[in-house]
Image (tube, rainbow, N blue to C red):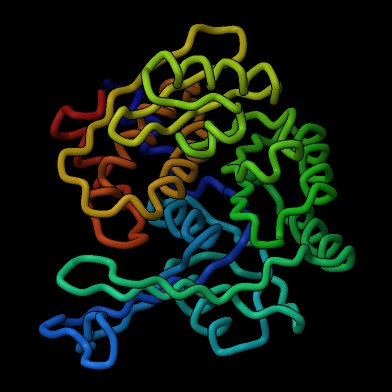
Length: 325
């Protein structure tokens, strides 16, 4: 459809602020040919190591690779992981001027060991205490210093950056300045999110937030409709192989089937979805149109290994092949 091409063309230079938990993803790739004589575990002969922006930083990376302008806000520690994370962010042309260094925290790291194309082990470095009021105020000040922002994305991984006070300030600021507020949630913070424009839970998060065990299509519908009522927000519920369910206040729900053919890795798919939604909505797309675009972006993402972002050229490829419709 022509309108999708119009929206994709307008992604360029849309300014999206992403605030949340910043994570450095490290991947260790190797071969496994034998079991350790010391314990019943595989021995990985390391071949290469790579780094990628994770958490809120991966949302920002997707905004950038989809040709938007990403402004990243969050907390890092004073350590070597900070330098690597900032370098990876800069490689994606992400503006990192809103990032704060907290001497009392370590930069969050997730280290994944991959052998024979399978994840064998994950090691996490994190300290999830909430940031103090001073850092909270500084983050919000950095957000307010940004100009011509089309949307704000709160990427909440419940690692200590997103507090109730910070979310309340952002909600009020977004409302006063007519800025779209989109939240990728964690159930722990459900009470923080009421009144946001859009909340994007996955199946597990929707189950915990609604209290409804989700198994059938009817369960997805019941959970989504309940969350719209309770949260006073639009809901895009990502449902894995079932695609997406879109619940817009005052309208009938919409179900969008998945377009993914080969699923290699779902990690980071939610980040791709929220970045795509923010950009599409910023161009004037309706929520259902934005969800269709985001669904296609997610289909591209899950065909990649790791938290790899999706590029605008890939989405345009879907359009040119007649698949984005």
